[in-house]
Image (cartoon, rainbow, N blue to C red; front, side, top):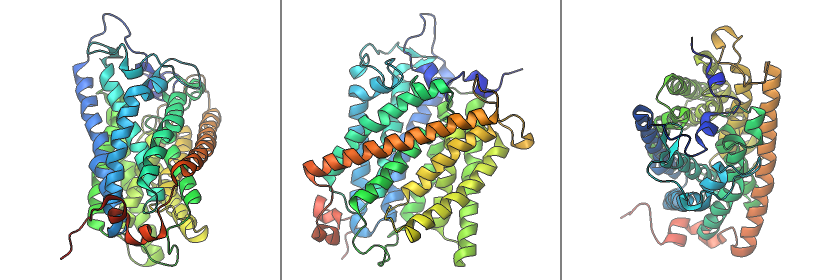
Length: 436
């Protein structure tokens, strides 16, 4: 009989650590099936950013800013890829210490066509991880959309990737202190969603609201574009979570199944709440609930079963919907595209729920067991809470410092005239739509 997934994954929070040590043995051969699946997953995760997230965010802003959002997504893909090659991968997955990796793999030193990570090529593992390093800073765009200078965005994204994303990745997936504690984060609840959500909230607070917020309505200019992007995100998420098994096996299949269940439940719950509260369901509500369900299941996707995923999706729709209403309408914080209430809150909720629904004693809602050395739900929840708090505090503090430094060097915000004109013309001398 197969051991539970959680036990097969050892003490670490996800299988990443198993694959982060480079060449393991001379007799290790490439697993063709797993390699083919991770090749596919890598393409799917990049597809989530380009064009998925770009279209999703692009449709949500006003027409005068659509190209600026698309440009930011493409620029981040480029700069994150280069930085990941130069030093990001080495610092995240190099042996180092419990806080940060080393520089042994700068510019992929020592990594060739025959280098292995587990039973897949290390170059593929590095590339798969690169797509995560791309989408995480790209998510933050939603917090400051329509008002940050392009030069400031580039410098902020570069610094944030190296000073926030890379260390947290090492803590959780690269052999750092949180993985040693037994944190469960299968595909990025802490590493991706909490870091991006908290950074977006801090950026929204530091930059201040868009001109006219909240008195002036700023509806999405193209919901067709947004729905198309959302569909691409849903499909791409199968590579995001399913690929995180780093193998073509039952773990990957179950991760994909629970991902789909949670996304479906989140979409339906958000749509229903919107219907009850405002009298009509909206496409925007359905796709936002879907993203909430996806983000919330992400850390738990390798540790829970379908029943747990259903509950997590329902909770995601309910909690993230109310968080969005509270932040926008009560606190009046202009997190333009709701990054924190959807990704940040969802990542926190999902990371905590991984400690609950990984339990094997919940009947049809059971998962696949707690981390090695942790005997009960209370112990796993404690580790999950430590991971959440550490990620939130570290991300908030370092993001704030980065924003202040970038602001002092370049200035963060466009002028009032540029904001009124729109960033497409003001910063790029282009228009998204040629209106005759």
